[in-house]
View 1 (cartoon, rainbow, N blue to C red):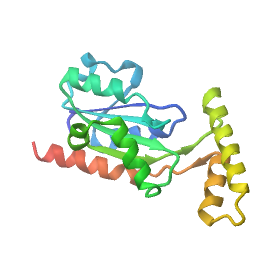
View 2: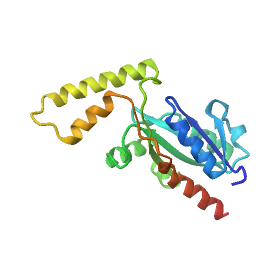
View 3: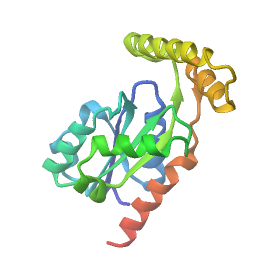
Length: 185
């Protein structure tokens, strides 16, 4: 890739940073700390890959990433991490992408979901409190059901504790697209 790809991310608990590292390594890109990324630092790159976490229906940092890519002239690719397992809740993912991109951007900007997990130990206090409150509310709602489905039980288990869904394999589609884009130049 000859340094044509800038990989950057806004990571809070580490899952997004781990994926960014894999993408940079496998695609031969430059990994840059999010606080150091600007239109000026992104300008030498043809492609900017940005990663952020899904948080309250938005991709954390995406608005700034789109502005930087636009100002620098770099093509943008986006990945988001979250606590949902791969393939679970496709409709939720679609709706979240639609909330974060215009119809034109959905067609033009490649975007990928990569399961990360939950790490309560590394979460900021407010995020941790919100997640614990959400978990308690969901447990109460489900407690009223006479019989919990396996999916309900798994959901409650997953939001109650830290867990790690990270796998380098989830980065492969984005890496393949980067390599295909490079081969096509």
